[in-house]
Image (cartoon, one colour):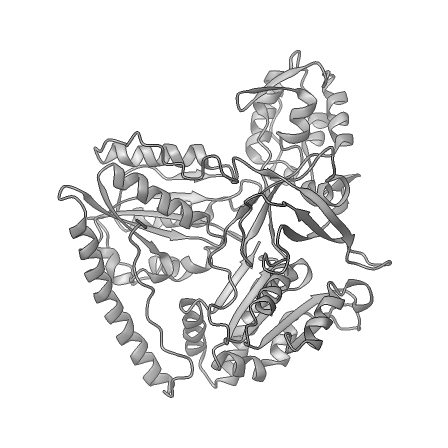
Length: 574
């Protein structure tokens, strides 16, 4: 039986014939009605739970679905231990209900420059506003999801935790900040809450994916196509990589991502071994309970690209040197640390104990399983650059571009992204903004709509430096246009003219038509860089809506929030 979840908040159709003032009043009315129905549904769920079960609300904020998965997993574990859980998307949680909660769990990721995920942004703003209530009766705990390779590690979860404390809420269990490899931390946090509430954890095995293809059990696949989509003379190298999984049960949908475990560069591994003066073929180290040669571990198990603060601090402790400033981490790798802060290891295991596990990289899938059964396609920008006097390579991107072959076949799994799907309504218009490799999921979306014969209009906005060398998937897109599938293609080749033009500029130029499509019920999608592009596109969208709808800034903001609540403004940004 599925875990209890609340209904999605009702939204007023965009084509409803109301003035902005009427629409604002009706939105408030619908929100009030939704809150009442939420309370009724929650009461029904609690009534169906054991009489002595403790009610607990579990809120999740996620850009790619990880927090939602963990929220549902916590609910299953908690129910077995005597809780009556209710799982709610943070975008659908009525703010006025916060002061009525007694036990609250928040699981949230962080994305971009320390920002809350899209579905948590409204709650985050409310919580930090003067409207937020005192919460002396609330018992809570936060699980923050992040990536320690980024400077604002787990910032959203940290700030929500700190704000709840300031509002008087009491911690059931201390916040835990989870890195990309979060399974152990999640288990510790879950057990800590259950213990703190005086409950007994269930001994049942909850690993429903055990034995299947997942992060712990990746599938080895075959590379059947690997071509450079950029033409000669381009400053970029973008690879179309087609992977065959044959009859294996690798289940994915358009909008999902593929997790890929990289293999480190053998030349860099050999340089590290030479500097450490350790025999990679003879030295044996333990990795996750398995014994491997040091060289094999450096190839497939250890993160040797990039540096994180924890590794540098631990390394300099052993070397008995003063840790460098945070600036040292930028543009440097393990080999730099070994050279600049040398340590003599007489055995390999003490070195291995300092290493962080290599994490899979997530790539937006650029194929529909309906169009390419037995295959999954990726659009990979190969990263090659120079910093601090030596050439560097993107760990996974150059592995896929150069070395993903028989000796080192890719090991993959599907990362579900339920919040990023083509419109459920096949007749709904679709606007897709995907510059550079951000085009990947939209190739999948178009293939999906073609395969399902969806009749909704489709519009793609794509950008890159030069049309002559960087028009990714040009022939396929022109074929979609010829077939009548792609109704509109707007390009922004930034360096084809003196003044640079980007996709956000095209949105401003095409504002009347974009607003018209939105009023017709279009879904608006964005994929690509979170730090700049996504913010610029977001601003351009606000501006287009404000000008074309003759709205105030607040009205335009409310319009965009309605798009988000209707799941019609979706972003896959990184």
